[in-house]
Image 1 (cartoon, rainbow, N blue to C red):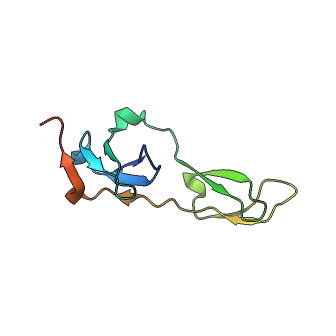
Image 2: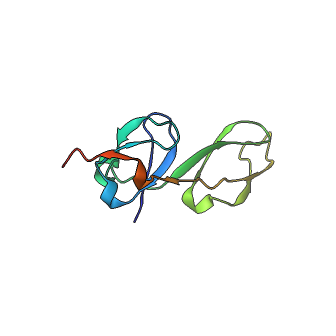
Length: 104
């Protein structure tokens, strides 16, 4: 199963298979070099959340994975416009961009 994580430099949403854990790679978005984490490195987040802005009032909102892709009213009473919760896009780390495996 793919591990979902963010680039430590540009916060791009990435995913990697277990064979890439602890492998040095270049981020496909910003080209920053970093080591792919393991689930243990990330502390197993309890529930994935996404942060986004309300298109009506511009305030910061957050939603859980169960709410991705759903429509709901903005929780702020002076707005309450309908908001579609975005689905996060996770870019797979291409295996062709591997630099080296520090454990080898």
